[in-house]
Structure formats: structure tokens, C-alpha cells
Image (cartoon, rainbow, N blue to C red):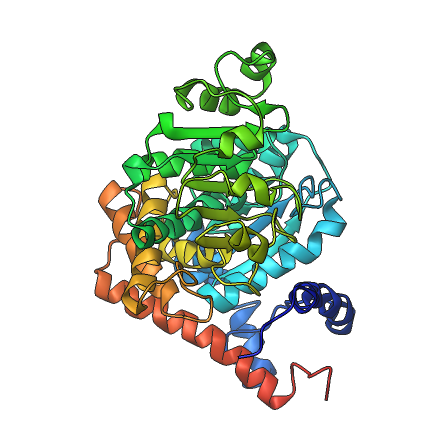
Length: 449
């Protein structure tokens, strides 16, 4: 087999950006609204609109839960963003964030059969965002907060989860954490280590890594064995800025108080010394993590470099430095630890039980099922989580999430696991086959034809 050069790897890594710049203006967006009901002739509009539509309106007025049966509320999710922290690009605004939110909606539909809508808000004020999301609650079965800067994202999520009657999810927190836990479960199996024994360096202390810390602790990692790093260095109880952290970044201060029991100080280099695992969700690379720092890690090191669009270190560089398992957030490298494996199946499961919330325990069950899908197929150093094209991942994940939701009492309806698997499988299969049919019939055109 021909050895791949670094130049070829770099060219491969840059190709998606080139294709995106060509194809986004060609299609002028990635999603659209199409009818799902029959329209035999114009007389059918009397059923779907006035006068016929007045009857279901009156039924819903008498019992608002009927909206789940007579409208598409049961399958609607809003992808809400203010554009204040889009990917690794920072505060680029709601319009510039719209391609990402459209892409999220596309993944929701194709992978989970969920009808998702991008809602980009022209405000950065947390209370205004909270108000806007509460205003649109009647239309949707769930809310996906996306690309909202921290620390306000924590306040927005916590407030909405308390005050709304439908699931509110911040994918940069919960989604990233769920799939990372799944990858970690299988990675430690491959290297023959136990979660309770490993030392973890978290590079970055934003929304993603704070949620990752919370979930990996619930999964079995000892809090004291976690060393987190932000832009000012390692988090610990004696930080010089602790007064500010307590006042403005309470979630980060909680990490200072509960992790790093040995009081390690310094920066990324010191955090990584002797670590079994490094999980980085910081700024795009390359060069954020250096090869020489990986060389100081424990044997059989595991590296999760999750920044987008460029990981903190290129996978081949991490391998050259001695890492045994390397994961990134990109689909064009092995071991894509990407939210796309999580949110479509998780929301499918939550919607199918009409959940009132998505709990951490539901996320953990999703992570375990993701790990199990990969393990069933045979995990190895280049395959610690399933790929997005393994479509059975999503109905299996949906069932696991729904089962835990029913167990925890957050479900409005309670069907058997078998019934829920069949429902999820049918919905997801339909979504995929519709896209393939439209491509075949030319309704989705081939730009290269």
C-alpha cells in the first residue's frame, strides 16, 4: 500500500472547505419545507386549511396536548443560536452562523428523522434569548441551543430547562460530552485501563469541557484525577483570579473546587505530563497541542483533539509523538468524536416519548449504546465510535434514551422498547429514502453533472 504523505493528508483536510465554498451558493441553502400530506387536487386545501382546519384547532384549544397528535409539533425541533460562538470561529453573528444551523437541521433530518428549523436570533442578551425561546415553545417538541458563548450558555440552558415543558438541550455541552464519553468508554477498553484509574487532562474550560468533566465523572472517572486548563492555566482552588471566577464563572469555579486534588499548577504542558487521556475542546489548531507534550503522557496515551474546523494537533503528529488512539471532530479522519452521532438519536428518543427534559442520565445511556454499537462490530485503535453511515446507531440510541426517560419519569407516553425501535427505524429510513429519491428524480440536482 502506498504511504500517504503529509502533503496529501493536508490536501485531504482542506478539501471539505473548498467544496463547501463551491456548493453552498450552488444549492442556496441545505434545507427546505415540503408537504407531507396528500394533495390530490385543490379541493384538499379545504381539509388542510380553511374551513376544515378549524376543527382540529378547536380540539387543541380544549386540550393542548392534542397538538402532538394533530400537528407536527411532535417532531419539530428549533436550532437556536445568537452566533456568538460559532464552531471555532468566535462571535461572527447570526447571519454568518446560519450555514451551521442549516447544517444542523440537515443532520437532524437525515440521521434522526427530526424536522429541525434554524432560528438565528439578532440579540446577544441572555434574558432576551430566554424570552424568545419561551415564546416559540408552542410550536416545537424540543429546543437545541447552539453556538452560544459561555458563560451565558449555562444560565440560558439552566433557566430554560427549569421553566419549559419540552426538552432544552445545548449541543455544545451535552452533545459533545455524550459522544466523548462513548469514545472514552471504548478507548480505555482497547488500552486495557479502567475509568476509575485514569488521569485526564482537559484542554479548554468552555461549555464543552465543563460538560465533559461532569459526564465523565458520572461515567466513572474520579474527579480528583481530572486536570483542566483554560487560557490562564490549570484550574485549581488557589487561582489568583478565584474571586472573579466565583462571581462570573461559577461552573468553572466548581471545576476548580472538585478536580485536581493534587493541586497541579502550570499550563497545558504540565497538565498533560503523565496523563492517560487528553481531551481538548479549545481553539482550532494545529499547534495548540505540541508533539513534545504528548511524548510526556503515560504509555498508550489517548488523545481527543475535538476543535473544529482544524483539530488542536493533526492526528498523524499525535501518533508520531506516541499516542496510541487519536480522535478528532472531523469526518475525514478515523474516530470522529462528533456531536452528529449524538443529537439526532437522542432527540429521536426524547421526541418519541414526548419527554419534558433530557437528563444527564439519558445522555449517559446514549453514550453507552453508542459504545456498544461500535463494540458489537469490533472496536480497534481506528474505530472507537460508530460512523455516521452506520444508520442503526440512531434508532438504537433513541431506544436507550427513551427507556431511561421513561424510567426517570420524564416521559408523557410510554411505549415498549420494541415499539419505539420500530417507530424510530421507520421515521429515519423514510427521511433517508426521501433524499435518495429526490436525487434520483433530479429534484436535488447534481452540480457536477
